[in-house]
Length: 302
Image (cartoon, rainbow, N blue to C red):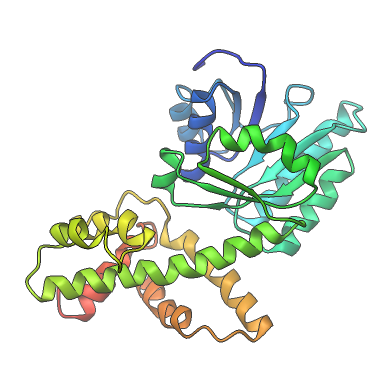
């Protein structure tokens, strides 16, 4: 057990790159964190960072009214939602009066399906995706795009403030994901542009680390240049803050939304083959900063 029990107990389901950082920061912020994670290795690692760690949340009925899910897929979300519903029904609880903030990046329709299922036992779900990388999550440099019932969002705000820098109520359920897609479209573009710019500098004889230092605060910078530029300059992308394999999910959701709305997106479209090349060149589990390696290879480098 890590830290002392506090007034507010938060149940965190999913402790991957983002979830582990969220849980650690909530515990540091004074919350009593119940963590649930399918990976035994991750559970063991997180025992020193959060108050309690479990394989699932089936025994949490009555222990918390604040849930956060940070999951790898829509299927996992539905499994968790069904588990919670089954647990409350088994305990004879018809109205949990609980809130669940879903912070992952999934299609709105999938989140809506989970929301409707959870509502059967009185768990109000918020669509609250996060803007920021795993590295940013570690230092609480995240933005929360919360959408759903206003009173429910207000009830979760103290929890959001425990692990993030900014928190926004962006309106009706689903607006959180809509905001996240806008943000991630720009992330996709700026990440590749950072790699392109650094490689350009290298080819002109500039030291990439010095380029990050000098250009990072100027007019041409971006958050991706600041966050992933150092990783590209050091060619260190094995310790992923967003794996290319997982990033493909986000890219697919954005692309589908663009096509459905007939929105031209030439810059985003130009990025797609770069990320696919990263996957085919063995960078599936590497950070998306590895797009630098793809461009480097195309330019006749390593």
